Every structure is written in C-alpha cells, then in structure tokens.
Image (cartoon, rainbow over all chains, first blue to last red; front, side, top):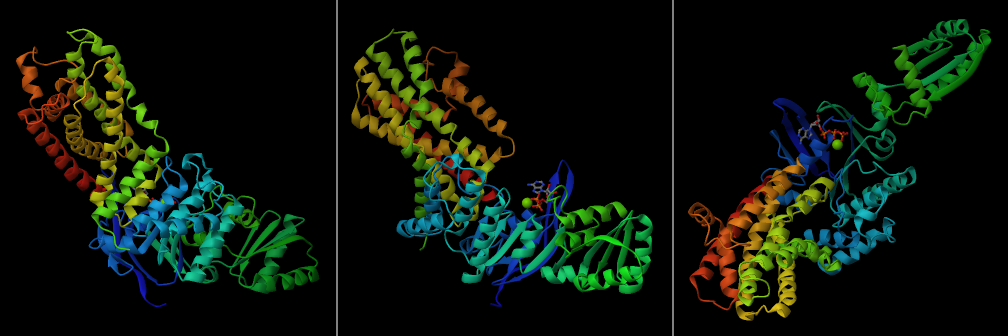
Length: 338
Length: 249
Ligand SMILES: Nc1ncnc2c1ncn2[C@@H]1O[C@H](COP(=O)(O)OP(=O)(O)OP(=O)(O)O)[C@@H](O)[C@H]1O
Ligand SMILES: [Mg+2]
C-alpha cells in the first residue's frame, strides 16, 4: 500500500490567452501513494482540471515533472496511459454511437479481447444501471445516464489509478449517492487509487480520505477532512435571542464561559465558533439561563469544508449552491457581519 | 493483451465504421449533391444527354466528387467529438497516435466504395459501360487518395478545434476550386493556358484522369501511373501531418 502512485515536482502550467499569461498551475509538489482516495477541491478556474490533464498526459507541463504509476508523463506517455483511467468533464462516449459499442471499443483500446470487453461492458452496464439505455444512441440519453456511461467507460479496464474530473456534476442526488457508493466500493474492494475533483463539499468530505485544497493554481491545504476542519474551523453555535440587548449580554457571558476563539453578534443573533460545540452548548444554555438571559433558539453546526475554505481564502466555495442548508445560513450571516 | 499499430488501427477503424453499418443510409446523404450534378449537369455537356461517351467521361468524375465531398467533411465528426469529450477519452487511452488518424481515415474508403457502386448501378441503364477490372483498380487508387484526404480533413478539424467555423470555411473554400481545376465537371482542354497550368498542380487532376482511363478499361497508361503517384503523395502527406497534429492534440 505504500508504493508511490503519483509524484510531481514543481509541476507548472501556463497558458497564454490574448498575450496575457494565465498561471493555471504553479509549482505543484504532490505525493500520492497507492491506494489513496484524494479529492482536489477548489473554485472554478483553480487549476484542478489542468492538474488532472497534465497527470493524464493530455497536456504537457510548462515546467516541472510528474511521475504517474511509475512512468514519466512527458517521456513515457504510453506507459502512463496504459495504467490509468480517466473520466473527464465531457462525455467519453461519442454522441453518434451506442453506449455498449463504445464500451466495447474502449475495452479494445486497452488491449482487451472482444469477448472480454463484451463481458466487462455487460457487467458495468448492469452495475451502473444502464441496461435500458446501453443499446440506444448516446445523444438520446439524459445527462445523468450519459454521465453514468462515462463512468463505465473509465472503468472498463479496471485501472489501478483512476482520475475523475467532477464525476457527479449534473447528477440528481440519488444518482450522485449511487455514484459515490460505486467509487467508494472501487476503492475499498479493489484498492484502486482515486483522484477526483469536485465542487460538492459534501462529496469531498464524505468520499475522500485526503482533501487537497487548490486556489489560484497552488495547494493551500492538504489533509484529511477531519483534520482540515479541526485545524482551520471550529464548530458553530448560533444563538438567537429575543432582543438585541439580550444578545449583547449573551456575548459577554459566553466569552466568560467558553473563552471561544470567536464570538460575533449580528442583531439578536450570536455566533460562537469553538471546538467541542456539542459539549459546550448545554453548558452555555444552562449558564445563560442562570444569568436570566433567555435564549430563543439554538443551532449547532459542525464545521464544513467550506468553512475551511473560507478561513483559508476569505471566500466561500458555495457561491449560489446549496443555499438551503443551515451551515450556509450561518456562513451568510458571518459574511454579513465580517 | 498486447496492442500494436495494426490492432489499434483496427480498433479505431471498426469504431468509426460502426455507426455507418448501423445506419447504412447515412452513406447516401453525402451523395445527394453529386447525384444532382449527375442528373442536372450531365445533360448540359457538349455531346448532349444520354450520349455514351459523355457518360463514360462524366461518371468517373462524379465518383471522385462523391468521395471528395464525403471525405473532406469527415473531420466535422472529429470536431464534434472534440467538443463533446469523447476524443479526449481516446487521447488518454494507450491507442497509438498514428492509429487514431489512420483508423479514422481508412473508414472513409467504405462509403466511397458503396457510393461508387450506387453511381455505377444507377447509370448502367442509361448506357454507362462498366469495365470491372479497371474500375476496381480505379477504386483502389481512389482509396489511397481517400485515406490521405480523410487524414487532411481530420488535421483541419484538430487545427480548428476552438473555432468550428474555420473548419467549414477552409473546407468550403478549397473544395470547389479543387473540383473545377481537376476538370471534374467540365473538360479543361479548351480552357485558357493559365487554368490548365494551375490544374497541373492539383493532385486531384491526376486522380480524375486516372479514374477516367481505368473506368474505360485502359489500365497500363501514363494517366494511371500519374494517378497512383498523386494518390500516394496525398496519402503520405496527409498521414504525416495528421499524425503530427494528433500527437500535439
Ligand atoms: N486550454 C486553455 N487555454 C487557456 N487557458 C486555459 C486553458 N485551460 C485552462 N485555462 C485557464 O487555466 C485556469 C485553470 O483552469 P482549470 O480548467 O484547470 O480550472 P478548474 O479548477 O478545473 O475549474 P472548474 O472548477 O471550473 O472546472 C483558468 O483560469 C482557465 O481559464
Ligand atoms: Mg475543471
């Protein structure tokens, strides 16, 4: 399990767009071992796809080196290509073809016999729930069905190392959960090394054992989701009082009890950021009650990777996504307060 | 489990061919224009409609034209696959880069044969006389030309991946001068000197001349030798620059 799967040294890629230099990836030093499950997380344009495209030989680095599955991505591209699977942001299966045909030709491309490719295609079609549509022309499939077909295409040769660029974009929640389950099984049962990019924080949190946060082409954090959250963001306790006055007294009181890292007031609401929020909250409520300060409602939220990102960069990854969750409500109020 | 240039080419070729086999009528779509030329243009030629020698002269040109229209446009399929992402998926696979271009270009030969057969079958009732051996050799030469032209069309697609209009602009701009300068629709014999001089630089001229000789049964002629040289030259150039473009894609 300890063999190196990916190692990059000062991997860099520039683009020149209208005479302006875009530094898509800068001095990336990455070390990923065999059997790891890694998520690259970052906002649009952070350099995630560019990184994957260099690691999969689709793009040559401007400078620096990368070794993938034991081969150098510039000097032995064929070696790399034979060992990896890649599921890009687009559709792997051509729209003018039938899904099953594309799966078989994909198997052939990786050196499988026709019989083996057919058998493997049938297996993937059933496990990705594509039976009803695999023999239809790809352009007639729904976006989610196409995405599942893409996944099947990338898995046909059961690679040791699999890259996925935003695998679940465009899937409904149920299919997203299925896909995550599939990726998880692949990792758990076959020890496949997985490197994926995602915009879904929950996905990175739930799936990855290691999250690499990228911003402006650089790695700004790299750890397990739990450690990232512990190191960069505390639990969030949101107290709502009846009056702004109560809130003000509540702030003073809370500071006395918890000596929390961070307390903020926004009108009748108080946000406390601290470790061990679940244990702290009952104490806090009792003590506030004892002091005669009435708490109207309380909400405790575990930190999310978005909180981590916000801490690290001062920006939220969420933008307009998933506004309905309580975490983002707190994030929003915190942004307003800041 | 091992793959090489030949198995890779076979993989790409059969993948390309599959939609054609699944939907054979697609072969006819690119033929519509040549068939119109045949029906509406042939009667205007100097010798008048139904004349045997006119048809004998005109049909080989229409066969080449039909190949020219279909094959020069084939890059648009690749362009579409570049946009939707499936070309990227093939680039990540270990398929050899020459195979990616060769397998695709070789596929063009299949509709070319089918279209030639249709044109011949349709015109025999009107008096076209088929010299089978010559015609088969003619189509083999045309196959080599097709391979090169297909590779060039794919090269154009790779070069215009960020601006689709460029593919069609270049293809449309080149196709008619090439076609007219090859004397495909009208004989150039009576044309001005500069036109005939220009046509000598058009490889298609030699291919068309060779097809005319072969379709009327003249096999061992200088025209045929010229056609072979021109077709091979187009194929070599097409595959070389096509492979280079694919390596850089
Ligand atoms: N082919 C290209 N030509 C020019 N600029 C490019 C090219 N590919 C990427 N870039 C630029 O490089 C930067 C990084 O892009 P990249 O696609 O790697 O981002 P990303 O993290 O994958 O973003 P997203 O989440 O939107 O997929 C962006 O500024 C992008 O505009
Ligand atoms: Mg991307």
